[in-house]
Image (cartoon, rainbow, N blue to C red):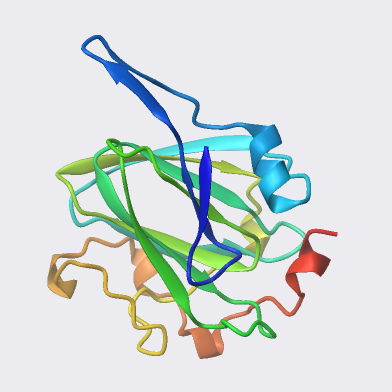
Length: 191
């Protein structure tokens, strides 16, 4: 497993080694010891989620406020998505900036998104299956979002806006400037 930091260093790509031949392949998709060695602290994933979406479906930008904030380790098992993490930590030097990474069932890359980030994705292939681990349970009372097309974040979703398919909830999310965001520093969130 190789770990590559993105332009926002707290968000990184996990690149597993794929062992393949004419019969198929084998890959370790998660190694707690390697991840924690890279991070320098312990992560306790408590739940695995999976969603299937059709081409053009955009889900996000979602997050949960403390004490139910979530770290996510996201991967695609089939298809291809553009996966996005937006820094919403008020005192962060990268506040309001985002990372966008293509994930696919072929390359098996994963995106590590720490607490303090909003997350979203759009399906670029005919359909995609996205699977992700979280280190906290869902809490409806702490569930929040930011509108996907906030001009201050300026995400290029790689598809024309009129081709995107969103839930009614995601169409009504606030702009970043009006959203409830993280006031805690990353080290306070993981304390």
